[in-house]
Structure formats: C-alpha cells, structure tokens
Image (cartoon, rainbow, N blue to C red):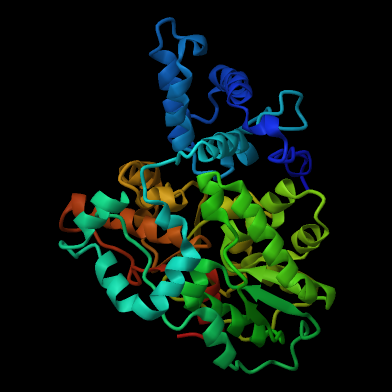
Length: 451
C-alpha cells in the first residue's frame, strides 16, 4: 500500500466541526492557496481551471479577494475521481500540508447537503439507482423509450424537469436483474482448474444488476472456467451516487448494511469481487475512511477485489485455465479513474494482456463523464470537452473493440467518438463493435464462453 493510501486522513464526518461553514471556508482557502501556487492539476478536470480563473480575474489576482460563494463553481465541477490526489498532487499526506482536494470537495457537498442544497441542478432522482432499478423491473420498456436520445417528445421534458441534457446517453434497463439471472445460470465448473479451491462472491453493483447484467454473466462464466462457483449478491447500492451528493449519513448506513450482509461470506473464506471500479473503491477505501472503527467494514475492505484484479491474482498465484484464444481486431482500453485510484496497478490491462496475440492500446486519461454529473445540463458539454482527447485517441487507434472497466466512461467515450465522426464528415469511421465493452466481457469472448 502506498503512502498516499495508508496516510490518507479519515473523513471526520462525526465531528460537528466538519460541518462548520466557517471552518470549511478556512480550510478551502488554505488548500486553494497551495493549489494556486502549484497548478499541476490544471489539465485534470474543470475544477482547477475554474479555481484559477476565479483567482486570475479577481481584483488583485489573489485568492483573498475571491468571494467564498464563488467556491461552489469549483466544488460542483469535481467528479471525485481522486486523480489529483493519487497521481498529481505532491502535497498529499504524509506531507505536512496534507492536501486532499477530493475529500475537501466532498466536505463542501456534505455541508451543502446539510443546508438543503445540492451540488448540481440535476434532479436528485438520478442518484436513486435502487429505486429506479426496482421500478424498471415493471416499466423498463416505457423507461427505455422515454430515455432514448432519439425521442424528441420525452427528452426535452426530461431536460427541463430533471436537469438531464437531451443529448446525453442514459443507461438502458434490463430485465430480469443480474441477481435473478444468476440463480438460473449454471455455468459448468471446471473441476480440473488449479484455482478450484477458491471461494468468491460477486457484488453485483447497481449498474450491472439493473443496466448491464451481461457484465456479471461474463464474470460468472470466466470464474466457472477457472473452477470457481460464485454466488451473486446485491444487498443495495454502494452509495457512490449519494457520496457525490454529499449525503454521508446514507452512505454510512449503506456501508453498514452491505458489510453486514457480506460478513457471512467473508467468515466462510470468500473473496468479494466487484464488477464496477467505483464500487470497489467505495468498499476498499471510502467506507473505511468513513467508518474506521467498524470491524465488518474493515474485514470487507481487506477481502474486496476489482474483477480484473481478481483474474490477475488467479493468473499469478494458481495459473489460469487453458482455452484463451486471440481476439481479432484489437482492443482500445481506457483505464478508469476509480480503478487507478485503488492503487492496484493497471489490472485491466494486465488481464487483457493474458489473451494470446492481443493488440492492446491503452488510454490513461479521464473520460470526462464523472458519474451522474456527465448527463446533466450543467456539465454534459464540459464532460464531452474533458473527454475529447480520449475519444480522439480511441478513434486514432481504430481498434475493433473499445473497453473500460467503468461502463459509464465506456459509453461516454463512444459518444465522444460519434461526435468527432459527425464533425469530421464522410471518410471517418467507428470501430466495428461500436458499443462499449467491459474488459471481462472481452476476456469471456477470448475464452469462448460468451458470444
């Protein structure tokens, strides 16, 4: 574990001073003064350009003359991707200045949430992934019809009432859920696999459970190929959407509920494998910083793996089962910010590199989507601007497949590619499989266990 991870300060949300607006303002000015003198993070997202523009256009070009109410512009643009903390800032703990911009922006949102505010103008319904998913089990066709970007009737209404940009792709809902599908799926377990002694349980995540169950199906098939019969469980969402909103009480309540639900599996020696890196980051890092004394949260964090991380762990410790075949056409892999923030290395790349003769190109830069921010009226165009270099690079690679561990990022990249192609006119093209893939889907294809 790196110093950046081990020395990160706990989120002191149970201390009343954490929510004191004056103390928050003092801390923001302390941190922003350091950022102003450094500016190494200017290219990462829109938060830092906004901050520096405020300073550079202030009466005397100093932070001192920037009104505190202007800091909301900076906080709202933060996607909590952690890249400034993990990859760029030289002043993070254990440095004495202890700069942690993502968690400072989280504190701002927590104070704002406590005062009845919200970080963006998007409708809070966007963050209710479980409630929306349950409704979709009955109304998926209607919801998918209404969310379709080509629907000129509903999307303008959704934009006006819900704050969702009419051109932003929205995830489709699928029925039945991954949890229900997994109960019927019986992939043949390879009894000859060297990893057959492992025990694993898949934490479905809200996105894979309701929107992209094929990610979980691919994971189950790959694990079965390697001798592992995994259960799929989903007590509730990891709380990342609520973290983005600053609703720490709900995040903590969810952490306690999920960690207790998974505790019996951990006691029986199971590893917990997540399908989306944002969820892995919550279980591994954010929950322990919010609940540092909770034994169940600690135990869960110690046994949690990102999906590609788990496959690479099998490959290094036991050896993967034979049967991987080349994937024709090449893969452009985007390394998701929340995968990088786990400080585990490039595990999605390491996993795909196990496929024979693979042509693999990596893009290690933010896609720009930023969770629910990327679909809002306020930020969708900014998200496209931030992600434009990624979309351009993916077009230039001209590989058959585009993949990211973050399904939202992957879709956003393909959307950006479509925009660039439309701007360029005739002569440009998209990869043959223009939809976005999760790396485990491509790994399953290479094994021949998924179409």
